[in-house]
Image (cartoon, rainbow, N blue to C red; front, side):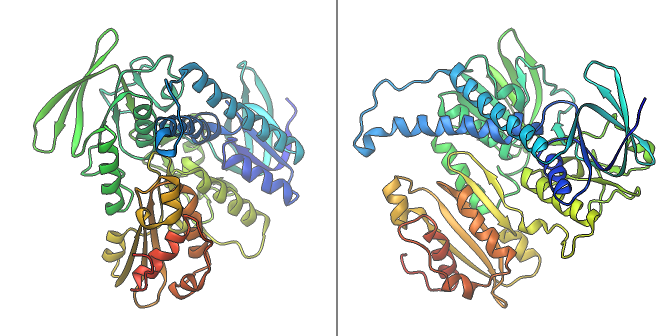
Length: 468
């Protein structure tokens, strides 16, 4: 069959792949992208975007139940689950269409099919109908195949009683009770969504605290908030066994002391992490190194095989869409010889959990900073002392800023509370600009805003807080 030749071929059209393709096209590279499922990948179709649509619904539902606090009347508040799910899918479909438009706008060839590396810059493609499509030849290839939900032996999903995130986003009916295995961002977001809509929710985490990648102080505040909402949380606990009945699941939970507890729920959601999509694309045959289910890369996203690169979730943590997009840009710019490209600095990548309350962070936690030998200045400012938060009726939360006491460098920032996922970007910019405490203290923050808490947390770290 006729071979098609390109400067760059991208395998996978998620937030890493499609952004890499756009940047390549902007730099004048003839580019093709191969996608076996959906433009936009898991993030846009079954992850970041549709879950935020669901969480927005639960946020509004929770606010309507508090209407009387604001002098409003909203009686007999309810929800239509089918309509909630339909809106979420509509949002995802709209953005998938947007990615298709961007591919066309930038002159990027899109091939629907499954790619397999053949070596020497060649890619075989199998169409969705199982037929072979024309082979692709490219000077450079980026693998951006993403990841999928991890399962454990004895905890296999079946799509009906035991769900992955994909089934959890399109429930046919509202379960009265749920067990969520795993307390990272995915597990906590689903716990928040389903609890807000009335389900009895139990969260199990094998480690000693929820949100294990977050600052310990923030994680403990989150646990207290979720417990007040009625979410049952069991840390230091693993699921020993799941026994399925006709329309329920019985789980045996074992804590760190070896004591067992039985819990019966209607549905189980497994949120125990993800594993890279490394199978079936010819990686190992080409000599690509794979460790713990992910492609090993260097700081420029190179795999060690000439002109073969990997970005995003398939290349390992942190498993975040914005990390994948940034990797895609820096990888392409390095390929194109753009001056001033810098390797990824993971301490400058913000992380967000869109639960109620929201949690966001960037940089080092307090524990990690101390272990690295920093002498610290730590500032805290509560939402309860912020005028805008009080006006919004959102007084639960904390902003925490961590500085190196000697240099004044911002080492990390950790937030819990309303709009924390929006506020964290201010700290992200500060870290990227290598801003010191003196510059942050001199910055004028608008009043009244939630962002003033960021300023006050910096002031507090240096003994200058004005409003506490």
